[in-house]
Length: 447
Image (tube, rainbow, N blue to C red; front, side, top):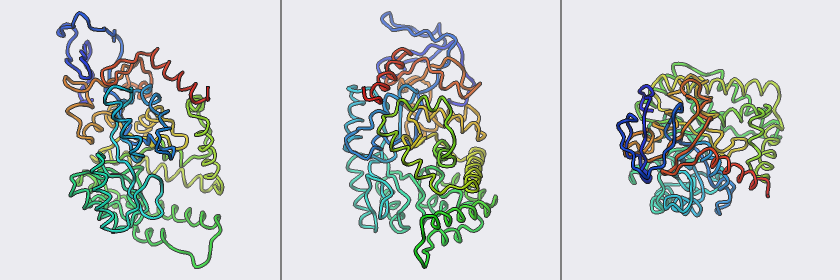
């Protein structure tokens, strides 16, 4: 994943949790007691990183969503960036994994969201003014978070106060572009990554401030749910119709200049765009690994989402999704850094499996297979400031690796043909991965 061509006839020597040596097969001295894994005819890539997950997304701080861990590992995901969750669960989980008491991916986390009132999700700290911004950022720093996550309901004053507080604490902040803030303002404020392309498409409009006024228009008379929904659809159509390539180019230049990374989570955007789309058989088969209670919540959310959707709106959603995909292609070509993330376990975004869907969608958007894989390996290491330890296969790096039966540079779908996963130096061959999935199936079905 350095950008160089694949190298054949290599031996990788692992000692404890690190790669001790990489080189031609006849140049590496293999200790007599070493366990040898025959990789002839196979392809080795760095462990994958999902840059947007929520490990405690069930809404309880007791870690009941740990069902994700085996699904992540079985899919070659050895590192995750948790984008909002309960520290009561995340702190001990990370420590258990770090101490070798539990097998799992390395975890980088934000803890509670910083949001306005009412907050979009829990757990959240509600920030209404500068005093609250300073106190909440300080408290999260004391609890050892890796970054700050901002959400959509923040006021401009609260958002910019959070940006200042994070800067004073030498901590990056990431997340949504709040609805009352423009993407350009977020870039100038120092937001390091934007998730789901939130308000980026609005920032490509020739009438962004007109869209902002309409977005927060308060009707003089009470609307029915159908009327409110129709007003949002009209607004979305205006946003699409007012798209301006010069405005888009200017915004992408600002992202490059200010080093604003993007985690588009196309797999999530596609789910939102096509809620009535029939799932592929392979996707339906993987749903068996999701606990029944969670599947029931997903089905309820999907039914709610479909309540007022008309054929015309479905066509509009398809067009908006297509424009988002086009933006990702432009970002890659413009030099904007792209990260691979999924928002697992959002409804029908299947933990672990979804990252491979995301890689395929990035390739469909115009990235090469190498660029897509880099979004989940080297780019992630650079963003997390761990390039000296991860993201490539090099001596001294963590031994987080995935052995594949076929070349993913020939076909990105080959990233799913996993023969073995090495996590923290421990190898899980296919039989162990299959057992992990079988155990998860038993747990999900309640047996």
